[in-house]
Length: 120
Image 1 (spheres, one colour):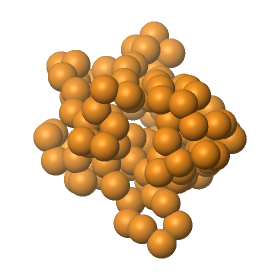
Image 2: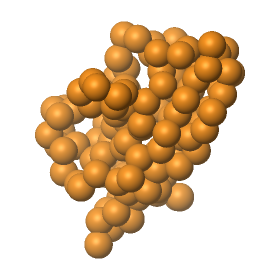
Image 3: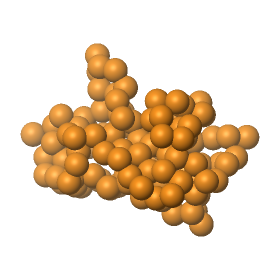
Image 4: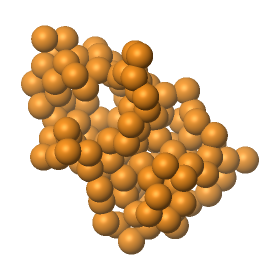
């Protein structure tokens, strides 16, 4: 059964860091393109960062230089290291498996997400 479980969110102050985890089951993250998304209240879900099966990465302009996506194949987990957090990073963060290079061709059901709140 395919499942995605996000964790690691919390309440932090601006400038601090968090690391989010996305534990996958039912498929191998190493063989799939994986991505992190976020949705702020009243806004659409948006791509934050993606990693292809070959290891290449893609970032939203708003997080370039601050966020890093990575994966641990042995743990079948994808991570999002978030540094220098800003209040505008406040959102619920989700991960998903995507088809090829189309970051919006989702292949799995959404997990519950993890809330990140950044205070100023």
